[in-house]
Amino acid sequence: QGSGSIVDIPIDQVGIVGVEKKVEIIQENKRFSFYPKISALISLPAQQRGIHMSRTSETIEEIINEVIFKPTPSVELVGDRIARKLLERHPYTEKIHVKLEGKIIVQVKDDQQRTIQKAYEISSFVKAKKKEQERVDFSYYIGASAVGMTVCPCAKEMSQEYAEEIIKNRQDINLSDDVVKTLLNILPFSSHNQRSIGTIIVQIKDLNSNKIDVLDIIDIIEESMSGKIQSVLKRPEEAKLVRIAHLKPLFSEDVVREMAKNFILRDFPNLENAF
Image (cartoon, rainbow, N blue to C red; front, side, top):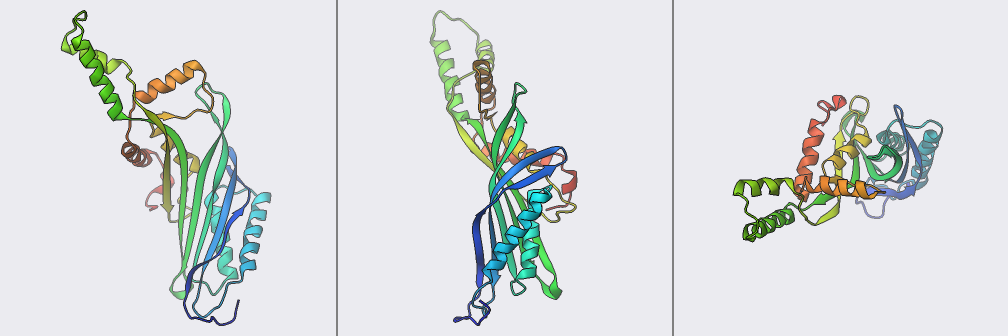
């Protein structure tokens, strides 16, 4: 690997992808398990034929073993440790990209205050780039995806218009326009609905001063939908979910804007000037 290359062309990313591991995360009084697929990629200079691949594998194993005995407070710190160790073991590289993607299993309370388990997809990226005078710039990204229920506003509007037409055409019903309008705003109307996946990815500058709880990101995504998906629903709970969701019909574009708004409105004291 250390010999001269046959063709002097640099390679942007060389490394290992999809290494499956388990990481324990502890945040204050919360603990959850993370099952990531880890990718570690480095740049290769034009003059060097190959990378020392075993050093990359050893780095991942070493950092994961450290986390087993001492759980980490955040997913980002795992990627940060791997990236910094790769810089030590691959002094010839100029850029490093570490990615962790996978599911977390967390315990949450449902609407009936029952403790249930829910799985969410989360991801973390760390990018490192060498600058002048041995300075290294680090960029950190943390993201999550969650599933919610969205109700189509257009179909609901058509259902209301159809109901209004029926009422006005009934000879046995004599209601004023104001009363009809009031009824249309009170009564639930049908629409089509679907499961929707929302994703938020946040870039932060400094892991020491800029901290964000990935569970807060998940909360923001779920509250930005028409309704929250539940794994088990009794009849009254099902009726409540359908009713609540149809009171908040949203297009996918609406959900994107809701997520952005709710993220800004959420109190993240550690994220001031973090982007």
